[in-house]
Amino acid sequence: MQQSEITTRLEELEIKSAYQEDTINQLNDVIIRQQQEIDRLKAWYQEFTQRLDGITESIQGRLEDDVPPHY
Image (cartoon, rainbow, N blue to C red; front, side):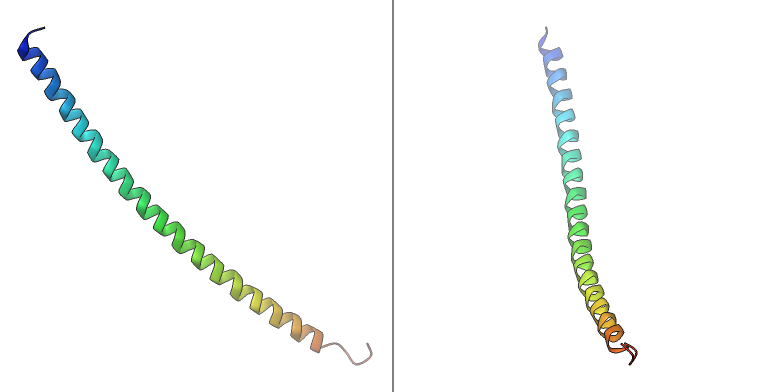
């Protein structure tokens, strides 16, 4: 193999490596954004279930208070 062929192949490998590194960085950014969204949704879900539990307890209390007198 001649020196120019080796140089050309090396340059092509360096270009491919640079593209792969850029792709990896872009994918990492996507993963970070997705994890932030997951964390936000988990916090929302936890707050929602707590509020729903409170509402359920409130309704249960009202239903128990509304027992007809003949019971």
